[in-house]
View 1 (cartoon, one colour):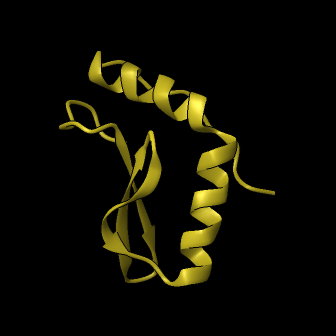
View 2: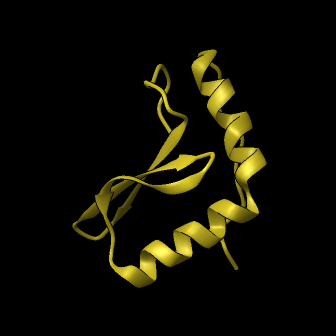
Length: 73
């Protein structure tokens, strides 16, 4: 997630040479593409941490540092 990003609320993912952006509400691929297994894991992680992602989006829009979001176990 970057500060001063454009709407809709989203986050960026890089996996090897792949790149994608995912919207937070609803959680879905917004731009780009990932291999299906990696994309599925990102969707699972985002569903578990949706509220934290939205809070981090608000922090980023306010120019503040985001909080750490736990990885998928």
